Length: 200
Image 1 (tube, rainbow, N blue to C red):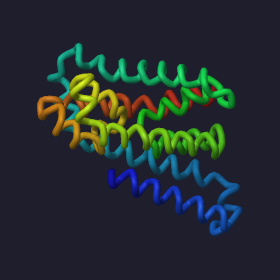
Image 2 (image 1 turned 135 degrees about the vertical axis):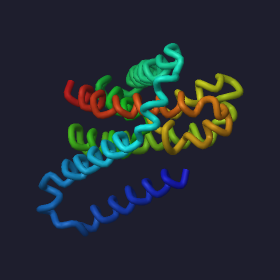
Image 3 (image 1 turned 180 degrees about the vertical axis):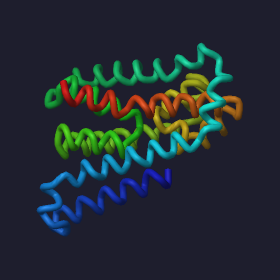
Image 4 (image 1 turned 180 degrees about the horizontal axis):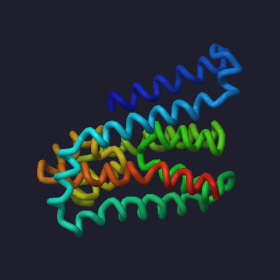
């Protein structure tokens, strides 16, 4: 929750700086967001490559549980497609691109801003932050009414970091490896799916 508030605060600060032209226009007209995205992908790569123990622990997973990330992706995209029917100003591919963030607001919003513009990038940022916040706040209700795996699915790409503590608390310690595996695979799919739907 604290991490989400920090991200939103930086977003608000950026909006204020943009309104008051606090950043030189030649920087804004260049490829600043592209370089920020490259740096972000570099650090994501370092974090994945550094944690070799987690990669080894994936081998002990039940093969049926390995389907959970796939079902999360399919369910999220189906929900995004359904929402597109009620949004007259947005296309199906726009909604699928936003949904493909799976809670990974920092990466997906940069990609979408780069391909589709600031407005849709802002929608992606806020909707993906909202996904994380809903998972954090409603964790006990999600587990009670939909089951322990539903909480992991709800967290999307955040289940190997920010939502992991609530998953441990409400789903149990037995679901740690499942949660990390789920977050890893969903996280990995974000850049590919977002770029795919932005390009269509």
